[in-house]
Amino acid sequence: MAEQDDTAIEAAVLRRLLAHLDERKDVQNIDLMNLAGFCRNCLSKWYVAAAEENGVELSYEAARERVYGMPYEDWKAAYQAPATAEQQAAFDARNRH
Image (cartoon, rainbow, N blue to C red; front, side, top):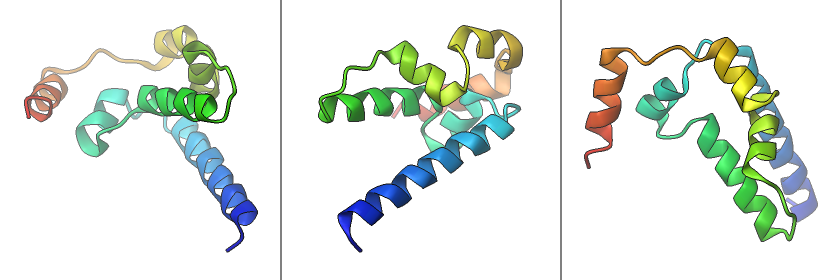
């Protein structure tokens, strides 16, 4: 596969992942962390790192807005629920290693 085609496909996959996460606002970041080891904030950090690797200046907040589809504080106020005791216990157990 040509590198240009590979890059276009990877970009399309990221767009689909972001759309899927946008459709599933009910899935909390702590759920993602507990099950997959990454969350929307991780994606934002990876977005910033990739921008830097390509010589593009991008703030973490701008990356978060791209990933969340809105300013993070707006998303958090509208969709983030407090972690349950079970979610927090699973998160703590996973991060002890």
